[in-house]
Length: 255
Length: 265
Image (cartoon, rainbow over all chains, first blue to last red; front, top):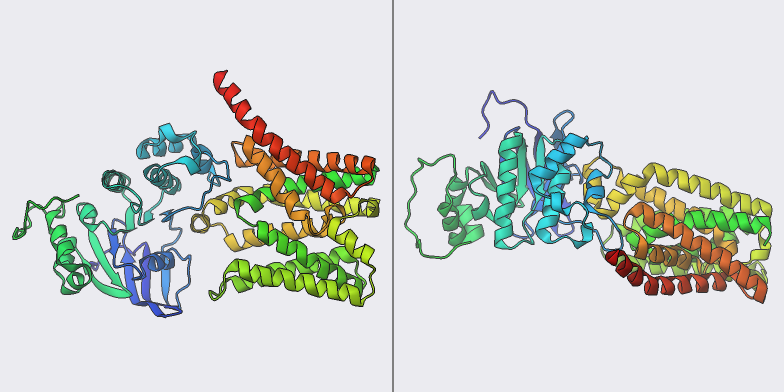
């Protein structure tokens, strides 16, 4: 999907191979993240999604291949989970200010953006899943990132919480003009904001606009017809004129 | 109480408070035990090399930590199994070496349970130096250490060298073990790390306060325990630990009462 005159990407991964005990977890993966991308990484469990994310973040060295970051790239990272136990007394405000040189106006802005004003004095360990994700999101935004990377951010949320979180991520994407790279199982929920879907099963099976990926035979064989149809229910918001074939059951209750 | 003992106990409290917090937060209690067990091998090696037991303990403790970091990557055996193998190997080899060298039982007993009378002014000043280094390093690395305790990935992604921070923490633990064995002994050193920190947790609402309250709880246990032990002419190490447990139990009772009063006010 890259155009010839496009500026150099924020992250450029070339021919990544990564060995695990049982063979290759990543096989010849190449991926560019451009400055205004919204990329959702999908794939079955054990497909190597988190490993790819860690490799792109340079948390993990690939066995072969290269990962290049643009000069001075600022990445905001929302990990899948954090290890905070109740043994450490740490409230939200202290956590947000930990090791960061964030100014007072910036701080007020991101607290407002993520809607966590009422959580600031609460202990981190006492937050619900949705509250914790918002706090982690706020922390990731503190560095004014050019790229926001999220690893299954809605994993432990109920459907309502998932919808709210994805909506928030989309709002932040529009407002802050940053790129977003996200691992998500809830493809049907992120359809409207995602510009590009990358389907990973050790190698990149298919990638492109969500509605195209949904028709790809490899995608259908990995996720089944149901997911492909589900994706078609939530068309890409920027292509409303796109023709859809509604040859499935509309009555089926979803999300 | 001689001035050497006062300096030594004060320095030990300064180290045990904050390092104990990390032991509690990062679930390193068993690691601390293993490190302490390795101290006996360090004592033996220090004697063989004629370098004194403290440098021997520090040397073995660092090897122990490096060995643990090196072995952790493999996924055949669980970390606590590896830790157990390392800890008991160093303990057993240490005891065998000490026996072979003809160290009398009473010496071993001192290292296992601590011997206050053995503390010289030089030993106390060494502890004070270790405490100064520990506090300086912790203050410099504090935000990174706290952040990586909540999430190593997050810390790494934000540019903190997690491996270096972790190694420095282990180095400080080794320093603590090497310099304090004489007061509390191999068998009880971990308790001086985890019990005051646990007492502090009950009253703290920030990581920094927990570290400071930990210092206070450790100091109360150390000074109180030494006084009681000297008056009753009993072992100092176990007395110190007993007192720290009493403080913890008191805190368990007092803390809910204080909280209720605070809510009413």
